[in-house]
Length: 363
Image (cartoon, rainbow, N blue to C red; front, side, top):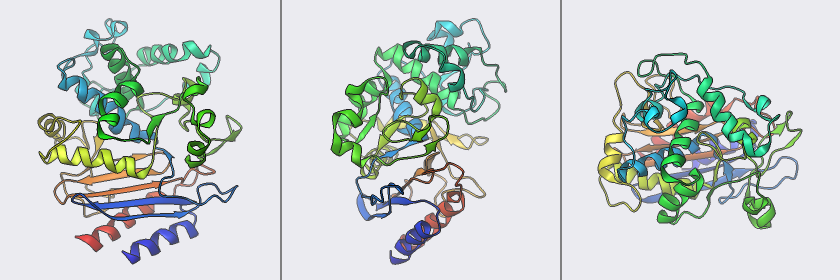
């Protein structure tokens, strides 16, 4: 794997990212696990294997989707259940007939993203999450549910709302109890910016030091560390269905292994294999499986070697994972590419190249 290490080091040198952690496993064996560069360009702190990243949209598959799957497993929710049967506030508008399946597959007709945070800052902190949901409910649809595929943050904010209504618990607490603790994952967590008691910066100096800074945010006017990068998630306290999850590479690998084992019908601890296999069915017209991305035919971030059965996801901050159950391969690439500026998009060209190089070494 020497060429892989050389390419990762080159990525740091060429400014694709200040630092990164790369983990590769085949079957149930970790074949490669190394760190590169720095976690903080201002302090010069070196990246470590156990560095904790803002996982951004990896929250969608690893948190919100997992929580939804658990509720379905417990017969408390159905894939084709419509929102009006769960959320009374949508019963009389255009979102009443949107189903859980359509939200998971990004075919709800909801817009991709809106900068709600600018408006929400004018509200009291305790009211912001309810206000965010109100804004989403009143947001016009941009497509007919079930027809158009539009990758949407809003859909997963609604899914978190669904989880909380049915479970009676905040989504971070529910998924931690039902999935993370069962798998023995220690370093997956959300950071509640409204409560110092659950903020690593206040409760554990060691944990805080492990958290990789993201952007020098022009809006919040500071370097972001131990608070979520996504503005809509941050403004409501840091815990949402589309973003907010923090974790290290080993924790990402632990849950990825559970997902791969479930898909392959192997022994699992937290996930129901039969249900996971149903959830991972891809519709012909869709680029998504339930809560997960799949390799695109052309120009996929996964490169050209991942099988058609593969699943994965990208995070805006520079994070990604890909799982190939056919070849029993997992590749996890966590970077701080938005540090100190989100305008750095060189990783788009780097990702498929590093994935191809890795696959060429192990296939």
